[in-house]
Figure (cartoon, rainbow, N blue to C red):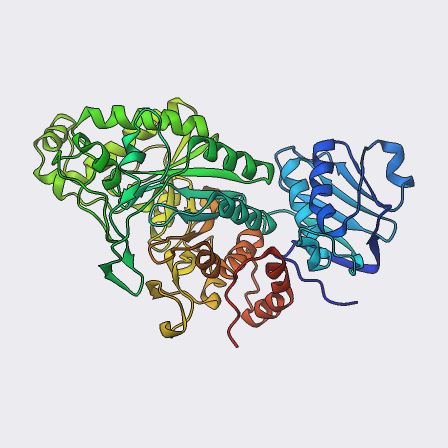
Length: 516
């Protein structure tokens, strides 16, 4: 029997003799017709088979042959666990809820010949599924990929393709970074200048020389209808879209549209270079919080995600130090300095979100000056911030740049690669990603929700380039987040990837080839 390669690797896999052959007479039986249709939709395009979907009842389970059965188990409905039993006479997918069934379907697709991922009939293929018994569940509930569309934005069709690829590897969080100094990318109806002005910049740095502009105006944004469409598309595939609206820093695009929200109050322009801008929201101005409340009202109406990301990173304090309104706020609130002022700022937003049943997530800079009571920390500057937050009883998403930043070069010889930010993160290093550091005591480990890979796009102007940077490194992250393996043999990973890469080819993903 040939080896079976699956990403992410299941917790339990038993190989059995024989195989199930999918053919024109195969039927699908499901207790929930929508799930049966979802599976049939995955299988119909490449096979060309009708694959009718029928209701499932107890008498069918033992009697039907040449069928795929979706059987609800007694497990908790919210569980992502699933079982997959493939025998020559039938295939049985078992789960307690929708997420588990979706994971089982992705595993089933990977067990089939890779041509199953094509969107037109492949008449020459024999659709055999090796007989296996799989029991599987993720090690972590938060398995995300992040995409920055502030620096460069991408068409809706690509966002959907990216989500499809995420679902194939059982990611469940799409972190959509929507606002930046270099562009505001989400329509807010109450504040049209955010997109009329804030989504447009005069030029963009040339990737080969970021100190030189290309002289070409750049802009664009996603309408609210497009955002709703993407959220619904992701939800159908078991993925939650978490929006990020940056504050108090990385807000120059917003200040360019509404200059009264900054400490200086005028002469702002959407940033045309990369890096950190000193102009941030004025913490002493009550209008800022009214504005942000209005913005988040519309954001919450678009995104049902429990978690809302507010950034909180890289907010220089020089404007606050010179601003009479900010200094008055520090005095009135009894704060020690500008760092505590940022903490106060974040707490206002956290309280606002909490009142509406949402939870605030921020990069680990939100630890500075004191952490908001219920905030979730996304630890990116290594793992130290996440360790400190978990020890203090806060939830954490571990995404250290040393293992998870997919905008870094993929080889030490940068001349071999397209332009990227000036750091290196080869696949082998990604594979060493540890989500649960030893420094976190067992009783605090429940605070580590999981982790994610991050794609910042200063040097990534196209969809093809984004895929090249993400894959196959994101596949390694998916494997780590699903089962956090104790065996981290890089040679074994490479051999598995060599067997698996035809799947990426069938998906039309512009992945980076493995090094020789």
